[in-house]
Structure formats: structure tokens, C-alpha cells
Image (cartoon, rainbow, N blue to C red; front, side, top):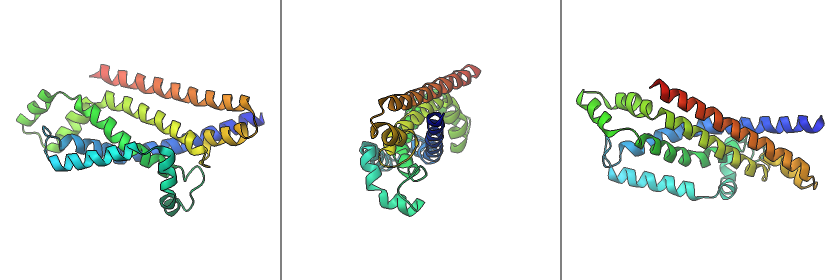
Length: 216
């Protein structure tokens, strides 16, 4: 019962920092993805320089391994959260790591929107914000939902790595209570919980994406 209680507590910590990181990363990453689409050569506002520089920044940020990023931004994390250790502190590196991923995933989803539909709506006199909301985001919604699942799964994976550096959650529990105490069974239990969470997330978001797609 004590082990079950500890695993449930660690699971709650993982879900907490993953959910907060997911929400913040989409609040920043999705607009970046939209900006990448709008400024490409055949976008609504073609800006080659802006698109190239923004794409370069996103790709550079994505290329930094999470463990290294987490160490590099310790001063930033401490400044924002008041500490660099703990579940809440782990939200900062998790979010920064997820933002460029969200930007690229969102960009790919928006690229799937039919150009003919956009041109037809433009011909009808629609304004740019109307095209973004009612064409880009609406048409790409099923793909964007699947992208949320992919991002959430990646964040959960990163949160397990964050546990190795005192980030809390299931990763920290597996390291401190399982690995350091040579309790392989406990490590396996923790991994199984993460696998179950990932499967539930993927299944749920795939179901939602299919429902949205059928409504269209």
C-alpha cells in the first residue's frame, strides 16, 4: 500500500508538470507554427528572411538534448521559479524543450490544408484572421489533435529524464527508490505506469481526432 501510494503521488507529479508544460508550450509554439506557415513563400504574408531566421531558431532549439538544456538553463529556472529542483521547477525546461517541437508539429499539420480552399476563401474577400481561424486551424484540427498527443508523450518522456536531476515525478521515484536501492521490480512498476499513461493518451487523442474528422 505504501508503494502504491508513492507511485500514485509520483504519477500525479508527472501529470501535473506535463500538463502545465503542454499548455504553455502550445500557447507559444502554436502561434510560432502559424507564423512559419504565413511567412513561407506561398503563405499569406511571404517573408523569406523572417521565415528562414525563425525556422533556424526553431531547429537550433530542437537540436539541443533535453538533459543539456536542463543544465544550461538552471539560472533561468531558478530566477523564474525560485529554485532549480523539484516538480514545479522542471516545468521551465520541459516547456522550453517542447515549444520548438510544437512549432514544427503545428506547421506540418497546417501544411496539410488544401491550397485551393485557401485561395477560394481569399477570393471571397475573407480577412487573414478569418482564414487562420476558419480555414487553417479548422481544417487542420484532427492533425493538430494528434500533434498534441505526440507532444504530450514526448513531454512525459522528458519528465522522466528530468527526474534524474531532481525534477520529481515518476522518473525521480524510479531513480531514488528503485535504481539507487537496487529494486528492479519498483523500476519496472514505474515504467509500466508510464507506458499505460502513454497508451491512454494516444488512444484518447486518436479517438478525438477521428470524431472531429468524421464531423467534417
